[in-house]
Length: 246
Image: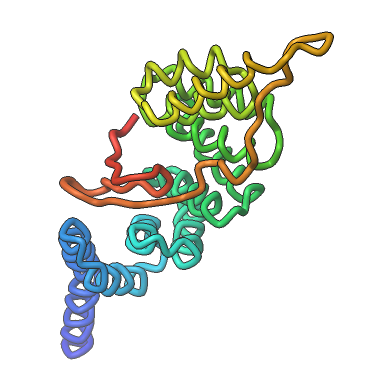
């Protein structure tokens, strides 16, 4: 019996060490992520997912490594696994929506944002992502409502996207007002030129037709950044971006 107890004690100790290994992998991965050392971060987070296959956080972080490199096809299944394991995991479902949006999987993106919004009903970031996705699906009225709600938070990037949305819908006066608030001088100049062009069109028995832009002008081009504290990564805003949590 003593031998059995000793064996059980050793086994318990080994299991304890195995359970403690995951935080080590997570810490090393996060440190590598901050430094932009993607190969090391990927290796560490992949090890964490193998040791803790039920860890939503580990899968989310692994997805973030790929998203930071704009490898959205690789990031998406890890974000999906994280969202499925624990939809309350910080930003997991939001990241899933962003990855699907980058891949033009608008219906899947919408579903992910709906889940994210269920747990973060006041998040301007989630409403922003959902609005852009609904526009991609051609559900313009819904898209406008969510983008307007998102823009109420005053984030310059969201204001810029809302202003560009309004420009695409031909609502140039409101677009210009919003873009002035956003500080996006390039998009503002485009909106002003569009208004001038519309105003210079000869009247033909009615008001000038609204100025519309092709769907290719949706904000689909993606760049990513990671700096400073952990979780600082944006996967859908052009330029290097840093999250401020809602």
